[in-house]
Figure 1 (cartoon, rainbow, N blue to C red):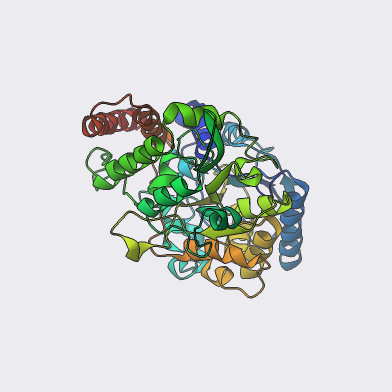
Figure 2: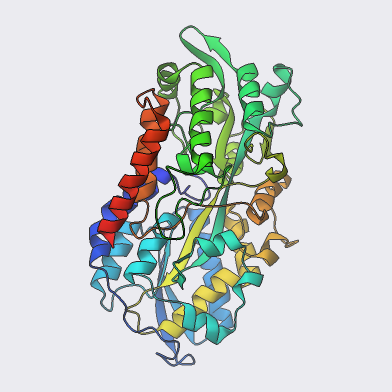
Length: 449
């Protein structure tokens, strides 16, 4: 198991889809002012989280022990391995057995969490604590933990997506292993040089571009373009943003020139599990891989027989000045609106998300990217030196994430469904298809409001 479960778009999509009905009737705003309970009272709060691996659980418990030492009047009951379905059900039904503090891996659900009242509004707590979040946390992380001006979550740790590449394979192909591709044209050229055909398949594929591939989702690709997704009136810009069309044509060119959709899909079915030692990057089947920061630890643990290179994802041709940016997501924390112990709950949220020692120790424990400026530059980070690439991506001013929406990841599913048809040649008119996709997104959002 990885040190941390990747938050893949597919997992987010499934969570969002199964949660729509629950959110529709979610609690809509139990009063949550910052004076609701005595902050100095002896109290026990319950914290629900999704981690389950031994190293993950230890990292959580170590931080809880630090918190309880600093707050002797607050005890924390920790419940792990909680997915979004369990969380949503508890937030919907309320009751004394539910959580006070909650966490989720699904940043794409923040719009739903905030707009439905499923997570409590944190504004009064932030104001009471006099936190200037803009000086503590990078803007992209602040953006994906609020929706339409309402902050209902705080970023815990971050995932940054970059490019892994097989330096040994680069040398064998006559490529400079210290010069990974910086533009998508360069990536295509390198991928062709790295590809070794074998029969009707491949001995080695330079890069797996297909949208069914591991982590090669539309929003992860779009991190290189940084679209807004919606205009100031909340209308989808999928049909009008040239960056989205450019991403689609760039990805389709990769598919066509690296062997074609059918051949690539056939090769993809030979891949081992994404979370296991037989991941295609580990085995050398794929020489370059779009992936999150957790892959470095997983590949190291798998004892791959080659040198691993790590770099930011390429940028569109002509935008080389933006090189270094990437797609970000992460874990979020919030307060259950039904909680009668919200002051104590806030103390835990504040500690876990803004205390530098807490953030650094947790990042070290599960090999994720820290979520505050001070933690990102802390000398106490104990990562592999190559991990700095992901710290730099997280701090890059043009790194980005998918926009929030009242129906969570539904609009991302719609874009992905369209992209799956386009890459296989099933869309004769890209521009018309993107306009229709935008109309579908607008219709779905209108229904969700």
